[in-house]
Length: 297
Image 1 (cartoon, rainbow, N blue to C red):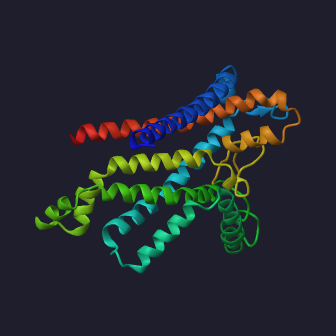
Image 2: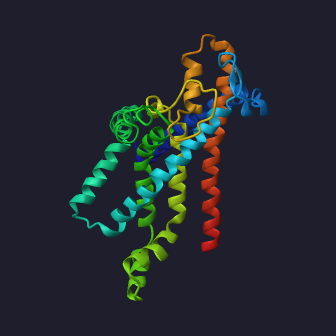
Image 3: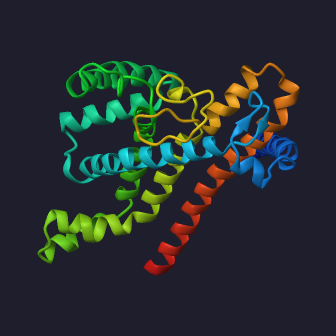
């Protein structure tokens, strides 16, 4: 077999693989769209579930997912960005601390999401929450239970490796010569980072951050033990309240329903809403990146 024949075979195999993946993705999206579009009404988006969750809407699940995503973003993005700046700009290649951080980040990136849920239950609820109740509420149950805050912090831990890696890689795309020129003109290390490095890598930072957030918005396993509720008759009023989530709502409908056929339209419509939410976040990343690139040019 000559070299040309091998190249042709490899090219055909990669092409078939791409087509197969596209077929699976498109088929999945078509099935979800066809099954959920008919039930995607304003009433479905703005009402509470009713009649054993076989009627009504998913408004509390949408609100709960949005609140969790916002708290998760505030908790994960600043710490992830600061860590990435340290690894890319301050840490030396032989730093033991930097090597330990990179090892921890790589390890966390491959840990199953259910492990994060168990960690959140043991650390945030059983340790931090119970001790807070002992100190602040004389042992009365307040923070030592599943709630919105602990679920958001658990999701922040899940997305933290993605934020760190994406921000660090974006920072490293800024040419070293630009940094040296800034320092040669009298700027300090921090001024160079703030005025040169971060603006030069902002597109990659935004893209990686929003993609990490979109992944966290659809996760279910980490919030099973830390805050998600099967059904709530009211919206969460404080971070210590439980909440409903779109992903968890889909899980409950598909596994705990007494009549799967009756709840199947709700499952499809809820899945479609969740996909639209994640796609919207991805589109926001694309639009922000294109606008910032145009301004930079």
